[in-house]
Image 1: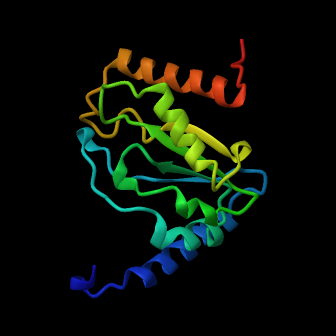
Image 2 (image 1 turned 90 degrees about the vertical axis):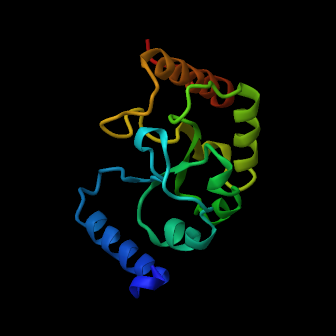
Image 3 (image 1 turned 90 degrees about the horizontal axis):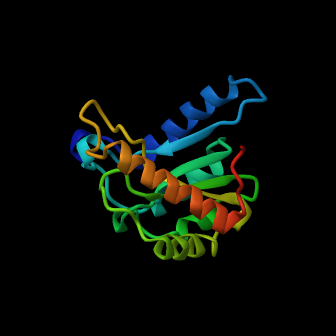
Length: 168
């Protein structure tokens, strides 16, 4: 960015201002969230680094009610930036990868949620895949069975961690 003459902090301010202008025009009864995508084209990614440098703008300035954050690999950094999340906002932890077929271990995901809960209360945390299952025209390499297994994993975790009971 510096090579092309851009200052990332100025752009962060500009982008959050623009997003907030869009949000201000939304219907008042509409719940709005934001997904911070790190790339998922064909199972590959494009961004690395934690949320530390943008946490204040992201969580305190941006006028959305919830965030879909990718935390499926160490490249997303720690949960410490979640300390900036105000009490009236919710964080959806993308802890299950849509880039790999391997199913995550239940205990590992539970430990990760417990780590995040040190910064955001459990009643304001959720879990999800880190991104969508398609990712792009090429997809992510996961077939329907892989996707169902990961969805079932998330459903079971929601039941264990929050007592979620799906509608019948």
